[in-house]
Image (cartoon, rainbow, N blue to C red; front, side, top):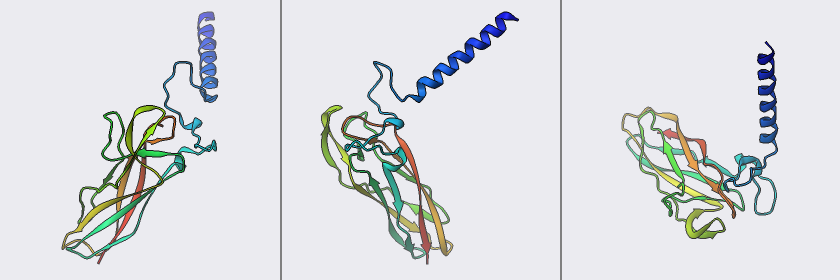
Length: 183
């Protein structure tokens, strides 16, 4: 009985220590250079919540049944940050990607990614391609002749990895929807 109580108290003490260590936000010595979400700061030193680094928004679009159109997904990247371009320059770089699910007689073609800028950063000796500020991804859409008329919603999932001048953050998935009206 005494051993069981000692074991339980010891386990609780270890859990309490682990919880305190994870709340202080400091990485142990020798940890990698990835910055966790609670260390996220912009180049100006102002803390930016991870959800505010990259925003995705799609413009509503109209397509005639049997016709084609181009959807636009606008990525807005906070000042002091960048995201990996598509295609990626380096083998380990995570490129921005978008996947859109077709729906109700509307098919989606291959995304057209915007031109990138090539820059050099402190954490990598070789320059690589990135998007900064704003990036517009174009998506060719086609509505079948028999597509039901009215408003449809295409679900889009983006995968981005935001970085600042010093390091990169863990990749994130962003969800947005593309409102499509078939006429």
